[in-house]
Every structure is written in structure tokens, then in C-alpha cells.
Image 1: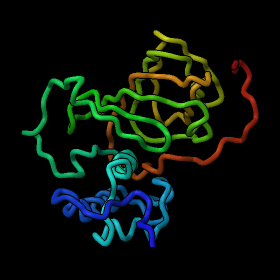
Image 2: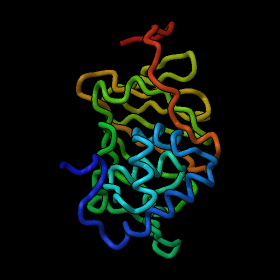
Image 3: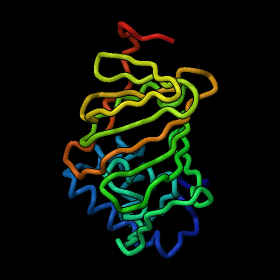
Image 4: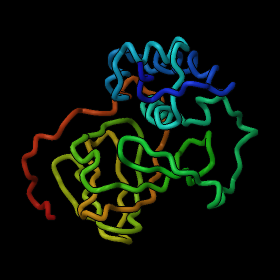
Length: 211
């Protein structure tokens, strides 16, 4: 039998302590097992096994769960404030793929904001509508990015940026087949509203949207 997706067979010592933190964060956010699993793209049974330590999450799964619970992977692993560093060197920015996107940590862990460099491939996650507490700021480095905020669609070119309340329903997708590279900063807030996805888009075009 093959292992569950998003799990590792030989967990490190740090991963052994993750299960109670996952359960505690979900309860602190007033999320049911079903709601949290849906937001993370898991079955409730799989999330239950992660919370009880019967399965151990992979790093991409930790990144997904950290985003659902409004925290960081470092905090899920129990790193303390003393472990934080103001400087992040390029050689220390290891890629972390999740949901088709690739993330590089571009800021210190355990802060009130999370800074990331992100590669958005064409066609990946473009139908996901996100709604969650806090603010987001993004800056396009390469390619063109399609950003829908509420009922308005925008296409951002290199050098363009956006800063918005992330309770505004939003979708992010690459507008060209080569994908897009961006800098991304968002606040990390615990909230019962932490169900991050509304589901697939309707597919109806929005006035002002261009290819």
C-alpha cells in the first residue's frame, strides 16, 4: 500500500511534536475537522491521522496547513522567538512547492507578517477564490499576473504592485504561459474566518479583464 499524500515515512524529532499543535490551532480557530480538511485539500480522516500522530506531514503539507491556520511552518515545528534572524540569505531560501506554486521564504519566521517569493505557473490554482483575515501586498517581478479583487479584474506587469484587504475575495493566476514571479507579503492572523477558499470560480468573464 502506498503512503498517504502529504506524509513522510520517517519523521524527524520535530515532526513528532506537530500533531498536538495542529489540533490546538484548529480548535483555537473554531474550525471543525471537516472545514479545516476542506481548506487544506485533505480528507477529514487524513487530517485526523495527522492530528493524532498516526501520519506525519511532509513540508509542502506543513506549508498548506500553516496558511490555513494563519501561522508559519517554523511555529508549527516549535521554533522559538530566539531562533529568528533579521537577515535571510539567498542560499538559505529553499524552494517549497505546494499546490502547483513554488514558495521561497523571504523573511524571518515567527513575525506578524510572512514574506515570500513565489512562482505562479500558468493554469495553477487560477480557479481558487481566497478569503481570509488580514492584508496582502504583492509585487510582480517577471511575467504578467492576473489578479481579481471582488468583481474587478486586473492584469499586472513587472513593476506593478497591489495592496489589499484579504477579506476581499481574490484570485491570483499567471496571465502568460511562462508563468509569473512575484514578491508576496501577508499578515498572519488567527480567526474563526480562516476557511480560506470559497471554491471554484463561476467562469463568467469580468468587465475589464484582459488576457
